[in-house]
Structure formats: structure tokens, C-alpha cells
Image (tube, rainbow, N blue to C red; front, side, top):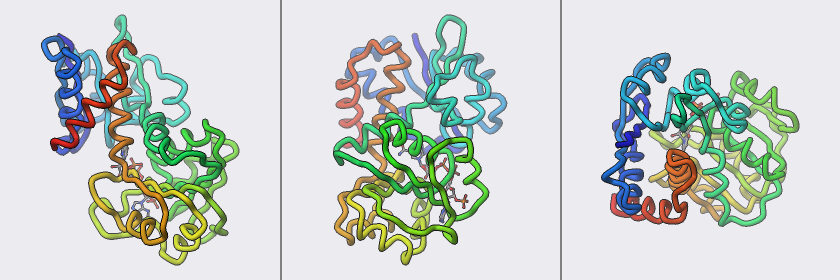
Length: 267
Ligand code: NDP
């Protein structure tokens, strides 16, 4: 029996078990694998817990993604570049770390079509995954954050431009992405309206990593006539990619996505 889990704190709200178990069921694997959740307080215990629970694979969410990178035996190039791991896989006695947030984001924005330039709001872990993903597709990326401190995250990446609100000079961007938690539990915009409006007037698409709610960011994008999406597809695609990594890429990706879509609709 393969056992998988999601580690986080908090983790009780996570819908990953629902998505993964639904896909395992549809793929006829529910007799040989199951997926659960584990609330982990101390990130330094991540790999020891993984081993103690005899897991075959795990997902890692806030706030342990950096700890996962630090503790896995082998991290892939994307995870190293982004500085975080959201998927752990046990193979031949070693624990491998991957990041599926970046390709999950690319899958989610595919329906928008051609994007040449993007403004990424926020400078945390998710912003790094999103900015890295866009850059890998040749998109010109500017990172805009409320404060200066976290912009240091981007200093080691070449060819990103970045600014805080006070320094930002504006510009024309095809896509605007909210990677901040503004709007998650409040009604805040991720940046002042007077800064966002002119950007939205020139943009074509808006994407919010927050899901399951019409945030003020998405409402403003809709009012500005932009095509827009919340983060549900990103969640789904990163989960589908993770499940396939647990099985070394042997599963049918489309079947996983369809099963997870169905599980989301039922929820
Ligand atoms: P971090 O804590 O690493 O970064 C948070 C960022 O948000 C910082 O840049 C911070 O700015 C900014 N911020 C927070 N509040 C505000 C505000 N009121 N106004 C402007 N900026 C603000 O968070 P993560 O990157 O780990 O996560 C961000 C979001 O992404 C979460 O909501 C998470 O749920 C979501 N997420 C969604 C995924 C999906 O699959 N859909 C996958 C992963 C994450 P400052 O530096 O100034 O404090």
C-alpha cells in the first residue's frame, strides 16, 4: 500500500486529499494507494515524519516549502531555482524534491493564449514560482511588491525587473497576476487602485492565485473588461502533476485532471 500525505500548518482546510483520492479511485488505484493530511508544527521534522509515516510521497504547503527543499536528498532544477519544494517522492531510499506550482500555473494560464509581458504582484514564495514559470516561457516579467524587503528574493534572478509601490513607474503588461494573500481573508486589493487601474486599462488578462472567491482584484479586472481566472486550475494542475510524480510519470495525466475536476465540482 502506498501512502501519500499533505504536510502543512494549518492543513485541515486542504482539499488535496479529496482531489488525490478521487483520482486514485478513477484510475483503479484505491486498493493500493491512499492520500491523507498531516498537520506539522515544526518544519525541521518534515523528513523524519515522512520516514516515520513510511510515506511514498507527499505534498508540502505553507509554511514548510523552503524546509522541504533544504531537507530533501535531491531537488530538481525548478525547485532549486524557485527555492521551494511542494512535492516529495521516495525513490530507491532517497527523497526527491520537486516544484509543481510553476508548471501548474503555466497549465492554468494556457487558455489565455499568447502572453509577452506580465506584472507579478507580490514577492513571496508563490511569486517566485509564477515569475520563474513565466520567464521559462520567454515572458518579460516585472515583480511589484508592497515593501522592499522580500524583493531581495528576486535579486539573484537575472532579467527580472522589480519595484516597490513607491518606485513603480507603471507600464504596459499583457497579464497581471496577484500572488499576494490580499483578498484571501479580507477585501483588500494587492496594490492601490490608482496604481492598478491604468495597468488594467492596458492589460488583456488577470490571474489570481487565490481560489474559490471573487477577490477585489478579480472584481476590478472584470470591471476593466479583462479575461480573468482564479487559482483553482493552478491548484488542480499542480496536484495532477504531483500525483503523476508519485507514480514516476506512468499515469494518464488527462484522466487525473478529469477525475480531479469532477471532485472539485462535487465539493
Ligand atoms: P508569502 O507569505 O510568501 O508572500 C505573501 C506576499 O503577499 C508578500 O509579497 C506580501 O507583501 C504580500 N501581501 C500580503 N498581504 C498584502 C496586502 N494586504 N497588500 C499587498 N501585498 C500583500 O505567501 P505565499 O507566496 O506562500 O502565498 C501567497 C498566496 O498564494 C496565498 O494566498 C496562497 O494560498 C496562494 N497559493 C495558491 C496556490 C494555488 O495552487 N492556487 C499555490 C500556492 C499558493 P510584503 O512583502 O510587503 O509583506
